[in-house]
Image (cartoon, rainbow, N blue to C red):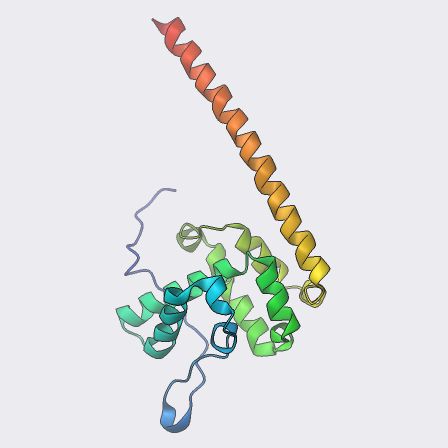
Length: 183
């Protein structure tokens, strides 16, 4: 990837749909599963959930607010790689909420290279793409669907790891042959 990259502090998500406001115009925490389910700590971790809460409160136009929002959305998008989390969202009706579905559409900006490079779990982008389809969202209510996706991910990782190791070994052998024949 050519060109200069912006430091994380300068990188901010595109304009966000306005956050819901409580009494007297104060921001209220978004109605995301992290705030309504104590089991979320197992998915995100205590520190990440605290970060999510801090980000929801601090989402302003300043750099610190943009950085927190970036981290919040990064964490949430990566959670989409977990089929069991998708099943959790589907069973609790999040995918029936038009605002939530619009939020998933908004998150498609993570497919752009300047944002995608921060993802540790790139399969989340494929899941995000599939979540744009109503049929897929409806199927996720079924635990067997989530289990199937989970099994397929594991098989992919196993196959990918073996294939990558074979490719690396072949490359190392080729480099070794080139080094010995070049002397």
